[in-house]
Image (cartoon, rainbow, N blue to C red):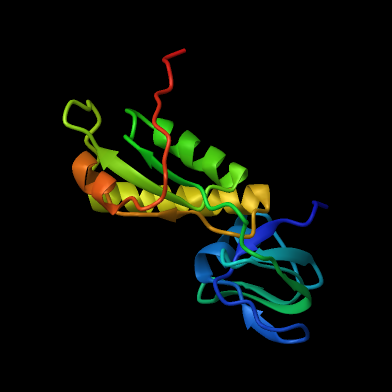
Length: 176
């Protein structure tokens, strides 16, 4: 019916153990993708664990929505040898989502959104961070990267520079 999709599960048990998919992921798997018991899914915890699982119980009723799985294969990945941290002034519109998706695909470990004095874009911190986190999880599932991009709170340019401890490179991306 469909290939094995990946789902975000922040706590993946050992091989042979069972658990339930988080509600938001279960809702997508059951109501949108129409998974049933016996189906196979991939799991990512964002901290280096990838797993394959078989669905043992799929409940899609008005009062209950649940997807229980049993882990069949589980592997722990080592963090990348090079840790990339991007400081970026969030662009206007939804371009930050594109930056986040590409950073997840490239293996960037951390992003710090920076508010620059003359920037046109002024995202609302809490709402923006929640949306960016959701974008990072979607990109994680799509790319299969076992490590979730960490998105730090918005900082002013000077505060972001003060926090930097590693050598860095500065540049801009020209408008297309």
